[in-house]
Image 1 (spheres, rainbow, N blue to C red):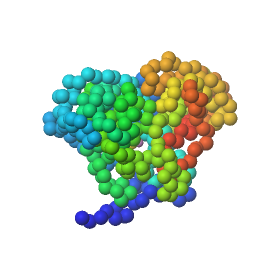
Image 2: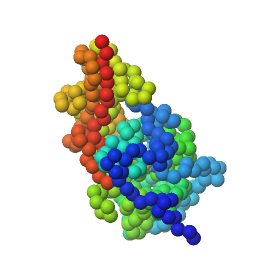
Image 3: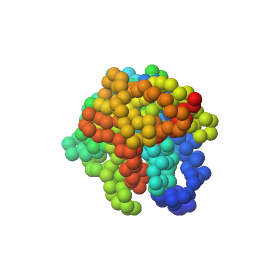
Image 4: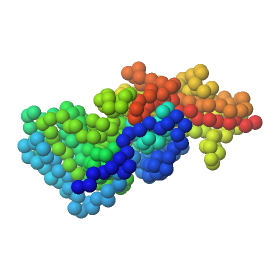
Length: 368
Ligand SMILES: Nc1nc2c(c(=O)[nH]1)N[C@H]1C(S)=C(S)[C@@H](COP(=O)(O)O)O[C@H]1N2
Ligand SMILES: [Mo]
């Protein structure tokens, strides 16, 4: 077997201080698109406008031959076809999904990876089968430790060839909110979102929600795969073990007001009153407060919160901006959740720019 060299699959690297976005990053950015921020107007993001993140290629799985295996440290290994999965009792939840790398391109120094700005987020109504019911059917044996979810996609990352795989501790895999989704906003999953079946881990950053699921394996030892042990970690030094990336940190997002310039996307509004709107979410606790700043983060005022919806979906907010002063302004919003977590004004830097929830900044020109 020929090994995959470093030119083909480079190691992780931080950009040099003045290094521009490269073709490699641009290629990732065109494959993995964000949600257009005007979709913050909608409770549910239409599939196709929901953000997409795919590490390797989108596998086109044949629903007539696809099967899901539940195996490993279990009493009765299970193998189901799609009809059998669809026939199982179903749960449905509105879940806000955000990529752990959201905001990465704005961090300094920036790690070379998918260069997200602000829009790696979306909310869908996902429906599917509770994971605990399937694990009970397979009969998890004494001594089980972790549960591994394997996708049908295959690639190489920093020299490590792999199927996309993520592990979860058994206790969490058995917890109530986790489910295997076959339906998104009332339709079968589209190819880019994991057809025919994906894991949904409400409240967690995107990487845990394994798409194109083919296998669920119970282990009697901790899982040490690449996406858990190397990729999704908060580290500050090369080679450091660091902490795993888990739940979504609070974030508020502003629907950019007025109309945009084509190239810079700077907003233009007329002098007068503008109802600013947006959404806020946290995987840690319900959203309790959203504040808005119209002066680049110097002063903050409380926004009005919309109703608290389901436990895993974003919450709407709004605030009336008296835009009396012509000229350039910078709008921001920041969220605080019921556990007291709030958004930092400046970045919390880490080597892979994970779980970065610094505030969004929207340049607006007020015209007479
Ligand atoms: N099999 C598989 N599952 C995956 C991924 C992947 O590349 N392969 N990407 C993960 C990451 S990093 C994110 S952010 C979410 C994105 O889900 P979405 O594209 O449906 O928004 O899927 C996760 N599940
Ligand atoms: Mo992600």
